[in-house]
Length: 300
Image (cartoon, rainbow, N blue to C red; front, side, top):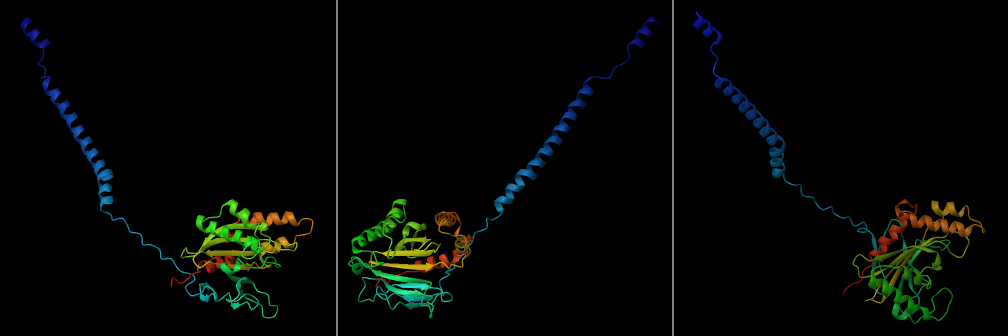
């Protein structure tokens, strides 16, 4: 009996090896599930987008065609050099200035008038052609013309601008000293000096806006001048900004003899700091630039 009781105290136990096998299988299953998830993430978020970007062709950009705004403009043939210049037929009328020089006498410019009033004989602007060979021998002193002692210096300045293809501050200082002919009268009040060149790059020069004349008021005149060394000629367009332009009228309405210099400086600052497109007369200046840039000379 004692033997039987001992047997009851020690019941049969299941082998431990079977429990260990089940745990290993569970870990393996979890590992397989994690691997499958990882492969899915890799495929959908990394492999597939890369394949799409590799097969998607990059769109080619078509160059934007530039429009020549002067294509339908009229052409003026200059009398002396036979160069050509285009001008807008809808806003400009051009006629020879009968008081200017002729191709036989070119110590003065050969001139053309822009939009001359038939009754008052006043014009909105002018085009001047200077034969430098004759012009340099011009009069020693005669009213509003540059004395021949200073003419050589002015041509040297144009040559420097032509070769440098820019206007440096020293150029501006020198330009103000030679303030007649194709330089603005009273050039000390000129602003917005800019380098200009023709479309064919054969003629180069400058533009500026002279803001006052002889009277106590704002009287802006725009100058665009190009020099061609091969033809030894200078072509210049001057155009008067209308007194009815907003900025000009607003300033002149406030001008008195006592505040003139102050308002002149304020007007100068306004022009220097403003984009041309924001000025009421900006498009007028753009038209002059477009016209002077069409200057061309035959290679024959």
